[in-house]
Length: 122
Image (tube, rainbow, N blue to C red; front, side, top):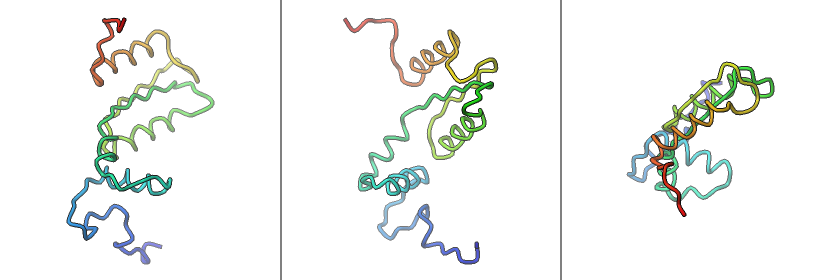
């Protein structure tokens, strides 16, 4: 199988002949967008999505979606260049943890996103 591998078929190869170097994360994002038949012409848009921090929380006792799936998602996003916060809740099933999970999300929004939760918009 690997003997038939041709480097020019690798979607993550840096040299595309256009003189523009893109990070592996941007190349991966463009590859996924291409698979989904989405516009891939804007590298800036692909790069911008990588700057959005991601919070993933998962219950260790989740019977519907095993925690390993959530951890794999976090690891994959991290490997693609995303800023990922992973939190496993040991006594939680397929739901969100109250109040710890909500507190973690609020802290994440304060620290990673910079939202001030103390003032009212009204």
